[in-house]
Length: 177
Image (cartoon, rainbow, N blue to C red):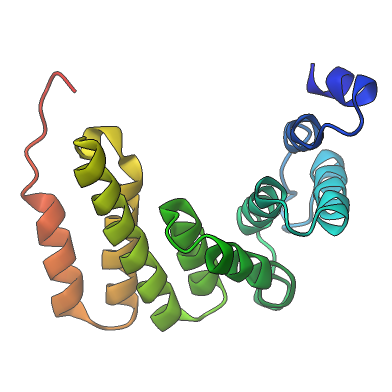
């Protein structure tokens, strides 16, 4: 359906993104992209080159690259700068902070990943407070906290990791949710 939309409306960036995104078919046992994955990656990169300041295109590019087994130099040189740009352009948007945390960690920048994950958790909490919703309606807060605990553990900061983990451990889960 998105491919048909793309053919009919080639200037529609969102349809092009979804069409490419849905072509992904994973990686082989050696970590090399399969045909659909390679085609999607190349297409999204082309869209990024054509639309270097489009938030959706940047986010699709970063997500599509960070999900695969790409090596750290490729992530560091080509993908991380785009994630950093997204955060610079939209510093108060917690999903971009969490995306940056993931990329920083994959590139070996654990201290920077801790900062980004902590910022994501803080921003998700602000959102929950402002919108008067709980963690049931904001799974990003949970993911940011779990990531933050994990990153502290990776850095050898067991006390900080335990503190974050204990914040999650005391949450009472309602059976109806």
